[in-house]
Image (cartoon, rainbow, N blue to C red):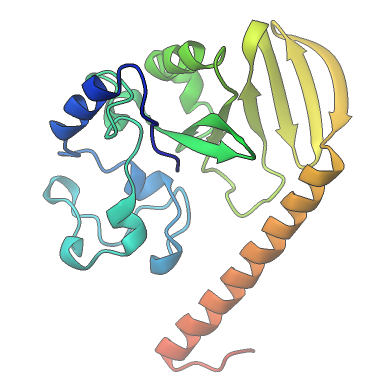
Amino acid sequence: MARLSEGPGSEERRSRAAERECGSCSLCCTVLRVDELDKAAGRDCPHQRGEHGCGIYAKRPQICRGYECLWRQGGLEDDERPDVTGGIVDLETVGVGLRLSIRVEGRGDFEKSQPLQAIAERYRNEMPVRVSDAEDVMNPDRPFRVLMPAGVMHHVEGERIDVYQDGVHVERSVLPWAERWARRLSIAWRNHGLHRSSIRRRRVAGKPESD
């Protein structure tokens, strides 16, 4: 997650952010991954209490304390809160630039949400817009899309990229070598973390560390 930088309109955004609270919205508690709680993306957090909020709010992990979606930061309109749009919208740092990330719970949820599509159109001429979902989250090759200016869309699945122009397929390629290696390292690190989490859960349950 990246934070909005200072600049034109920043005072107005800070004013909006100061007035905003999560309220009954807890979509991030379902869509996002929280390693400290061994909670996978797309799975309800076991500490969710519906309209009563987080059951461990006072003791919630630091990653939960520090997280603010773009709406909470004042970067979206009042009526674009995640529980209204159906998706979590964030800014992410990529190399030396930024991209907008839209994460939904189920495949097809982005197409069902006119507000999310409007947000994507608003931003895609300024920065890439990555659209992903939390289905089949353990599959490192699960597809996602990157919306770009002038009607260009990259459909990425594993290391393959299909390029579309205004809905027409125009090219197929693979990720650049640097991105391929970064992706493989990320997968290896994630698998390592999952293995450590599995061992920790077995220890807590009093089970042997391996079968």
